[in-house]
Image (cartoon, rainbow, N blue to C red; front, side):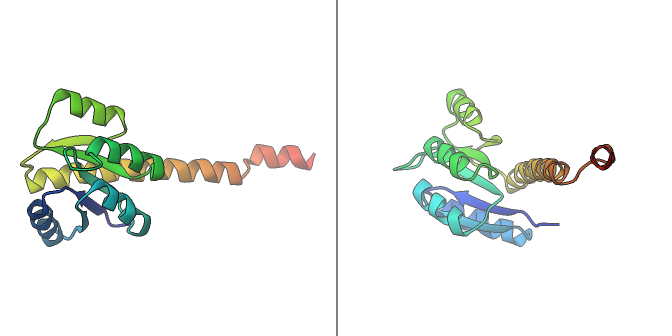
Length: 149
């Protein structure tokens, strides 16, 4: 079974360092990026299953980054993280493809639980894709019998 890999994206470096260390102590692989642009660049070479993404960042904000992640890497699950939570930003994030959102300061247990839920969702979707591909590749016994007549 594949192990979950998380990417943390936030302009607050202290948050990134602390959260990454806590995740690694729990046996979870975590990479970090300090901006939306850096996250997109890293996703091209560092496979991540779940991205924990800050809403408010200088330059490319969280919503713009989310939209670009979903465009380029549609299977990556994104959880929005904000210290400035508003109903509007949460709704906009969810409408744009985020799986969930967290409020800062987020407890490490809550981060892990939401990431595990998102990873599980991704695995379920991947399994559905595999089944659909197998059905396309393999023929049913009825189809084989029809061809031999």
